[in-house]
Length: 228
Image (cartoon, rainbow, N blue to C red; front, side, top):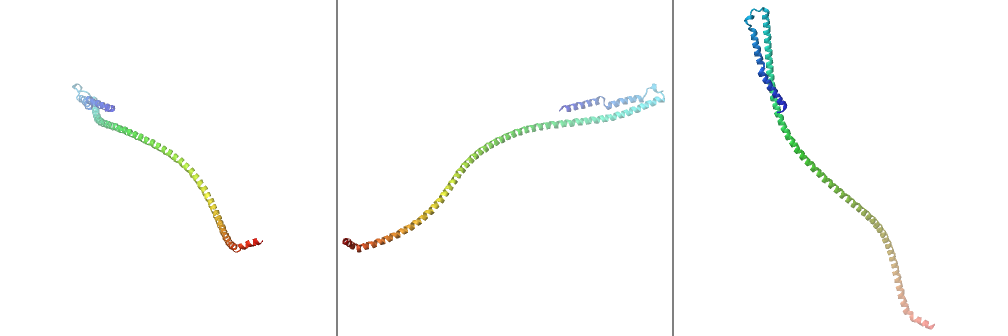
């Protein structure tokens, strides 16, 4: 029970004690006794005049009114006491509820701490994964740079090969031109060969006729030479 509940309990107990010691009932009883003493005057006062009697009646009326007022205040005090008791009970209930909620808060705090620990572990794992991924990305970037360098080297080689291909293509063009020239020269040579063969044929025919002439006129030539 907290301090406010204890203070309220003390106030209620004090109020109850005051009611027991001098509550409305005791006050009313005292007033009634005083009223009775006023209504029953002693024998010595029987000869008082009418004014004194009227004063006594007024006093009695005032006392009666006071009794009613005290009775009303007693009812109010009783109701107030009941209200205070109810409030004390309500406060005790609220205090118990607060204690229960405090227990729930402690449990929630424990769960939150556990969740924070778990969350911190997850965050740490995520950071580790991110670091690993960053390292992998850096490695991949290095490999890509290496590949890019290789590609650039291959591009240079390809450019060289392309230049060689152009040179070869030019050489092939020149060879084709030479081939055409050679073919033209071959045609001319074939023509010359045909001419030579024709001349050989003519020479062969001349030699045949020469031999024949020599056989026919060879001896006569000798004779002519001899005659000379």
